[in-house]
Image 1 (cartoon, rainbow, N blue to C red):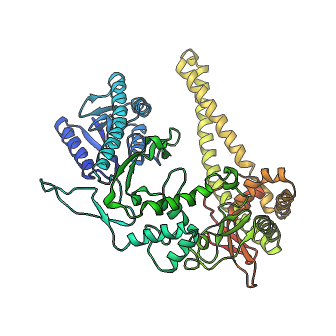
Image 2 (cartoon, rainbow, N blue to C red):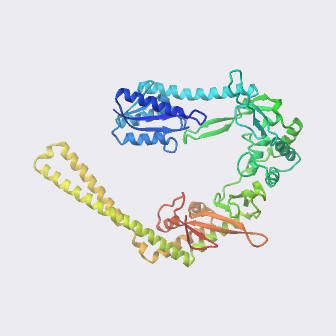
Length: 543
């Protein structure tokens, strides 16, 4: 029996050798039964409810591709929970594997049919939920004993102690003499009225290493008001170990883990006075500072997406350019980390940026050198596609010739009395359908636009650019044209101008999408295959 083995373990916290153990016991069973092992597939540190797509469980996806190509008799796993811990996935996978002519067989339960599959699917999914509940319960239990159930917060370090059995006691913490004073400094300065940005600037200037990343950022200090994270919101510094602030949920559409805040009444507060760094007065002073901004209308805090969002980059440090106040764009590196991270303090108004970017895009695209470069690249692309089509056309004509000959033989068979056989009539019908499909594909190849070899391709290109430019004067038209405009831009580099004020912008456009725009082909919003640098530099640049 031709067999494929599948093994999986769920978390980086588990022993990675467990997957080798699963494969080993499956191999032993195959040797005992005389089953032929065709291949072995594995998924490391992926939960059983993660889904079945290639980006969700690549090992499982590859296994299904092999099984569905045929020639496989069974999929062997240690238990059904290794294959799926979601009822829908379990049923879907069993249907696909059975349809391909194979079965699912586990060492724990034997062959998984509709009955055992339904029962095991329910039990495996429930076990996953029970496991999550048990983990949360264990975290609350550890916290009630003064032991940290999570990672090591900034300002603390791990204590290595052993219990009576000689096992290390996890979760013991103590002050870190190097970083605990930094926590006190942050709280003191924020309570005095300094902003999180100003504090980050000084920390970066003083060369103090952040908890993570290359430099201190505002979010590291202030965190999220909804999720109650960040150094200034960490209750541990006030001597309270809090558990249950958030919960992990699986998005049923994408199977990605989402973090959702829990209501405050569901939090578990556990006093740990020996870990208190910030006294009650200083903690309350910081809370008052937060309260000043708590009543701000949500619409004032949330900024709408802009036409050029996520396209602008600082030419000095490489960080993104984002909206920093009202309608002005600024370097994120400078705003978050200060001059020690980036010296580019220049800002630009959104309307000015959009106008310059779109004008630069359209004007430079209409530059004679740029048009010539475009036409040259288009011709190269046309030549490549024409070569591919020529090869495909020869193959189609060969298939069409063989198909027409087969139709002739079937028609002759019917004329000789074979029409009484349903198989012959069915074969003739299939051959006729195949011939029609090949003729249609051949006709499509014959419609390859010859405009690429005609001078009018340049004028068509100019007309498309002008149409996009006129959209800037019409808000409704701009909404429609915005995706195409964004698709033409790869990056907008913003650097300080040589003058005392202002910035220079350099647009890197997507060559492949410019070709698509002029030909009516769909644009690709993924990584470009070629770029054009505009506004300061004209010409073809590598991707």
